Image (cartoon, rainbow over all chains, first blue to last red):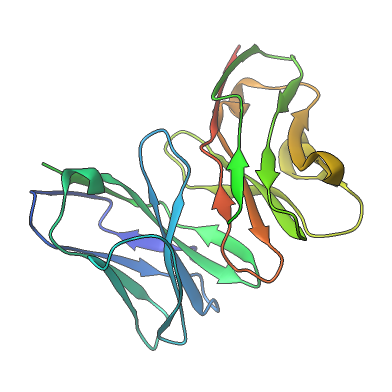
Length: 110
Length: 113
């Protein structure tokens, strides 16, 4: 049984560009959450998707958007990238309130 | 909104030493509590969790944590650490009824062989 998978593993972009990150949840998990983990900090909640709808959102600007597909996989899109968006982006799939994290995508914005 | 404080940002121990990592949260209602670990180069994984019942919770690899409601604390302990315990440790809290945990900033543990 594959765990949570994320792609790509690393990404380098320049300011102003747009990026799309992808996540596939554990088999049987229908809820996906996205987190941003800056260097030296804990993960910060961006948003959660359930049944293809955004169920809850953290304190992130509208530049951060997402999508969930019928197979429960999810995308995180970030527009107009800023230097401060450089971070590890984590995806977690959920059963109940227990979360299972993927390996993350390391985004560097130059 | 709840917040989580991990007061020890960096801890360095020798093998066989005892470990206690502090975690305090600010939220007046019922909470669910978690400790996660991130080994070097690996993804975040659950060490242990508290939902209700016995406030002393045992997790994987010999870790345990005690929920003290009056102190709003959920400290992580291990009687004898190993070199392989070198990792980043995160405390997380979510209010009962919420699906979203709030994480502390983490404690980096280095264990010398």
